Image 1: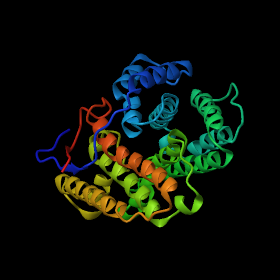
Image 2: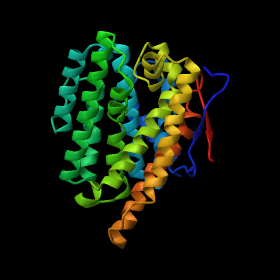
Image 3: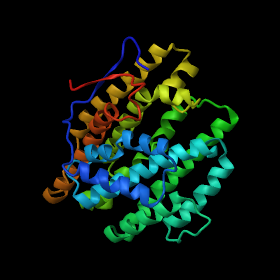
Image 4: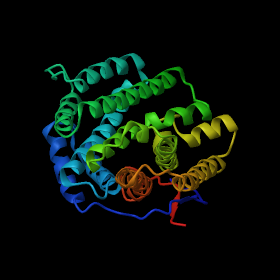
Amino acid sequence: MKTSTSPKFYCPFPSRLNPNAEAANRHTLAWVKRFNLVSNDREWRRLQASKFSWLAARAYPDAPSEGLKIVSDWNTWLFIRDDQCDESGFGRNPDQLTHFHERLTEILNGREPDESDRPLAYALHDLCVRLRRAASNDWMCRFIMSVVEYFESSVWEAQNRAAAITPDPLTYVTMRPYTGGLYTDIELIDVVENISLPLHVRKHETLQGLIRMANNVVCWSNDVISFAKEVRHNDVHNLVVTFQHHYHLSLQEAIREAADLTNKEVRDFIALKERLPTFGAEIDADVQRFVSVLCSWMRGNLDWSYTSGRYSVELVGECSHC
């Protein structure tokens, strides 16, 4: 789907690609096969066309090979979980989804999967084992909490679908950073980039604001780009849909509203980045590396979206560097 007057996204950050992208893609495709995460040829072709490894490679352009493989596997797991919950009906059954998430949370906390578990559980266990080798216990607790919040937000979506509720824009914007799962990826920056920011830096209001804004930009632009895909699946969890429904806008007006909001968030991010305080030379260098990944996420998500087979049929919007 493409509208007659597609909005342009403002994203003046450099396009970058990790040189290990192809190796990560080969690894992740083999990993998916190893854990039987796709069950037929159609799903396999869809997975290959989606190029999830290239999203990871654009979002983490400086990640070392092993770190990029973990990010690539994790994001592929998230997308497959999302698709399988939709196709199995879990995405419209909050009780079943809650039960499934309870089991996945046990595995996140160290439980071994058994023969009753789905392939997703085995793959998640493998990821946790690898993460525990690379990360501290404190970081693992933060990551698990972020994943649990993602699970909770997915149940919120399922409750809305079951009750035929279209969330209002304010509630939707509040929940969107969690439903996208991007906070889990932002936690991964520490492990992939070997960054360990002190608590007072990590929780500083300016850095937290930049994290929230980058998350919003990625999720809102994705809502515009994936609009037709979600409407085809009768999913109301999309910024364009909420604007249409609650503000009584035309499709074109709702798309423009979502794109304008996204572009304003990018400009606000740039302005806030200039107000980052100094924490000392060594910490400042790590903060700049951390923020650089946030910029790469915003730019890389757009670059990936326009080349991934996941959205190529129904792309809405264009990309602008200025």
